[in-house]
Length: 381
Length: 141
Image (cartoon, rainbow over the protein chains, first blue to last red):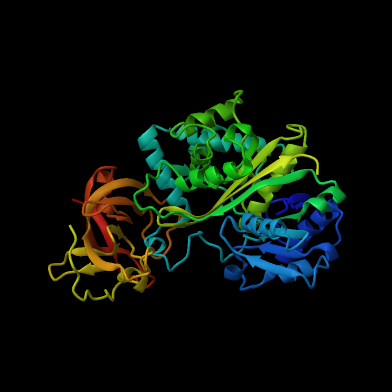
């Protein structure tokens, strides 16, 4: 088996892209990734394209082939992936498997989404699920976890709001982020309530955007001078344990344990985390599930991060989903890119520095349908 | 407590995905149609038991339990639900099963964790033509 390396990345700004098609948006990110990698499309053995909503919103199918033809990618294997919010990170995982197996030397991963569409409406997990028919829209599942966390651990509304303020502050330094104006705890708490106790500023905004990366094997990594090695990539689904306490996310814990074992590290080794903060409570649960703090201490950890206390692992320095924006198909790829760029930039440019990207997607039986974790190491090929 | 079902009819007033999951007996009591594989009871039931791919045994669970957690949805409601509807999870008394459901608006103030509730079938919201929608709803017991 050969380890996958990230050889190049491309990322559009996230926001409203009214005048550009999904295919063109995806091609923009793909072009940037190919140019950064210094690899021509003819050397790509496989492309994995992630998109969650085009089939529902526009009726478009197999968008990947349409999008990637714009960058001259033709003839190779193209796989289209839909896995809710983890569509992009699932595409990354699949491409990494192809590299590991030796099936291909280089793979292109692209995630793209256009969500500003009149047919979007409230996002749920599908009209055939009984819980959906009884009104379980996506924010509600997270709100119920928030209620349970507050009830069991005494987590406060201010601690939930701290996540939003922290991530917005981080987004101010990210030119690709959608929401960059600073906000205060009072702003978050006084925003319109979406689902109790989550206000609008505790929910990630819909967005258009695309993200792409080139994954290569070790031989090509040396040829191209790649610096980001994929130490672990894990994809799991929910356990759908109907009596699990909602104040802990066991799918997070289980997936993190597998990822840390595969990478041979612990949470304490991480220099940065990008996690799936679709809602404020989600980030708090992920602190705990990923082992950044003990179970029940996530609210306090949010306060410590906001205060900039030493000893905390930076979480969502890109602004996270809540401030960078959440174009569903692109998010999972973008998170990994943000980790790689953080490791390669001024904050943590040392060899051996490690970062983690975490994502979740879909709801089923009070659990997530999918969970991904990628652990990236900055090193020399 | 579980009860053996006897050819429980589908409820025509509910969407098929919901109707398959509930049973109303001649006394008007609402039951949940669960599945049992070995000692594990699951609601909604799986099509097959994961251990040996056999068919689950169908069991009817009484809809009595206690509120685990609750929230109110403030945004524009989907599926003809009323504005500001309440939802949550209920831990059933009869089996280690947690059920998602709607909470009756008239009991809104009483729906706190630990509160005893019972499952009913009652009008909850109206469709585009103004016709009340029948739905399974937990009320304070």
